[in-house]
Each structure stands twice: as C-alpha cells, then as structure tokens.
Length: 103
Length: 159
Image (tube, rainbow over all chains, first blue to last red):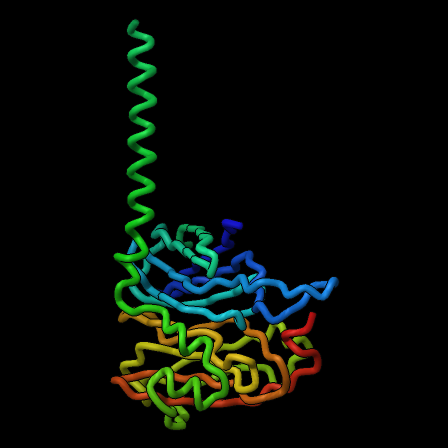
C-alpha cells in the first residue's frame, strides 16, 4: 500500500509549519481478527520531511503511533513556493511519499 | 526504417531513464539515513526502565519540556501529543522521544531534529491503558524528561 500523504505547509514569518496525514493501518501485531487469527505487524518505521531536498526532520516510529499517522513539524529558513516533501518506509519495505509547495 | 530506428531510440531512452530512477531510489535511503540507524532494541524493549536503558539511561526531570497531552482520552487509539522545548532553559536539543509507560513497548516515536528545525513535534499515539506519558529530550548527550498522566476510557490496543 504505497500510500499517498496529505501535506499542508504554511508560512508564518520565516517559520514553516508542516502538517502531514499519512494513510497507513499501523498494525501492532498484537491484535486478532474476527476469526481469532493474529493480524501481522504492519507499521511505518521511518519518516522524513525535507525542504528543497534538505532533511528538516527524521523520525523513527514504533507500532504505537496511531493509525493514519499525523505529524506536525516547524522549521526556519522557508520561503513561499519552496517544496516540502514527506516520505515514509514501513516494516514491510513499502514506501509512501507526498509533496507540496509552501504557501 | 527511420520510424523503426526512432521508436527503438525512444524505447531505449525511457528504459535508461527508468534505470536511473530505480538507481536513485535505491541509493537514497543509505545516503540520507546513514546518520543514525533505527534503534530497534529501544522500540522492542519492555517496561520504562528497560527502554531508558536502551536510549542511554534514565532521564532527569525538567520543566523545560512543554508536553501537551489530554488529561482524559476517550479513545486510547488516537491520543494527540505535542512536545515543545523551552530553548532558553534547555538549548541544543537534537532528539525527542515519546514514551507511553504501560504500553507493551513504551517507546512510541523518536524524532531527530537538525539545526534550523524548531524543537517542536506533534503526533498521535496509542495508549493501552491509563498511565503516564513521557516526553524525553536529548541535549548535549544528556537526557531530560517530563511526564503527564492520561486517563484512558477505551484502550488503544483493542480489537
């Protein structure tokens, strides 16, 4: 499930606030389905936010981040029109990415 | 003849371009993430003390971390957390961790913050049952923490 990411990047002075919403089940591996079978762990392990290609946030996650994860970060030195990109990789090696222009 | 040749050229060009994209994608992770590997043992550690041991010791309590969490969470599966560092009190923060005391594995997330990025992060975590949530910051190689209790009406790991 190479998921899309909804991203908003807003400028306040020269600080940019990025809000990202990723589509992902974030299964812990500890839940059981209706038939009593264990649902395998499936969660985002690695998230990166870049500004014009430079990493402004790099996060490692466990399965305890909520399903369809939300992330907000703020960084300096931004200008309107710059590109902000968010990428993730999960424990199965699947990837998701999305980008937006700063407004 | 000309047509066949140009078609062949097109196919080769797009093949080469595809190859370049694949190569770039394959190289990207190692290049960007060489800085620090994911601390897998910290994410699978059980109990707070065990998890603290994996990240380098028990943090010292501080009031320099502004940790915003709900006092009561109706749904433990989606608990918003916000961590802000008061940089006048605690400068040079490079990492922020979020832990949930009574989750099977307390470490939920860690954030590596390069220079130029605000010492600020917001996300949502699962909280299995009523317990303390911890915001931990690493600055100059030392660990600091602030904790706050969240009461959970409906656990975050049900199903």
